[in-house]
Amino acid sequence: MGADKSQAAVINCLLPRIFVEAPAGYGKTFTMTEKIVEDFRRNLIPNPKKILALTFSVNAARKMRSDIRAKLLQANQSTDNRVSVYNYHALARRILGLYGPSLLGLSVDLNSCAQLNESQVLNHFQHSKCTLDPQVNRVLTNFSAALRDCDEATLDGLIDSYNQILLTVLIPQNCITDYCGVFSP
Image (cartoon, rainbow, N blue to C red; front, side, top):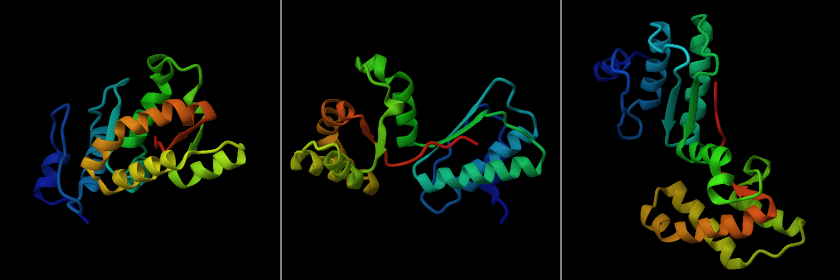
């Protein structure tokens, strides 16, 4: 599959920053991958500069990471860990891992917390012989569903409760929600 005119315009753009936006299925992951590979091929990314590729879905991040790695290996190019591919949630998790404890006044290393999806939280609490309030479990489950469904209204209504649960319930039990992975080629 080759690039169409609009994709080729993005891939060959020489601007130092570019924002790619299009509906689902229009080839954003392909275009961003090709742009990154082409910029490395042209030596447009001076060392120590880095690239952040930000996607909405975990699958797009995985595909982009895999494709970038394969195409750069095929072209005998090395990124030297200069390309980071995240979805929004993973980027936020990365930032929290780096700066959260000091910003939030926590004495716990968030990177050492068990990373659980909403279906694993209840089991984690049962194994640690702690009870999890059913309302807390509902907030976590509803927040996860709203995140998956891109339901902004529900997310807006739950975000304060969700954050409070993270700080007062989950982190003290050495766990944190994680609906995705972090990817770096």
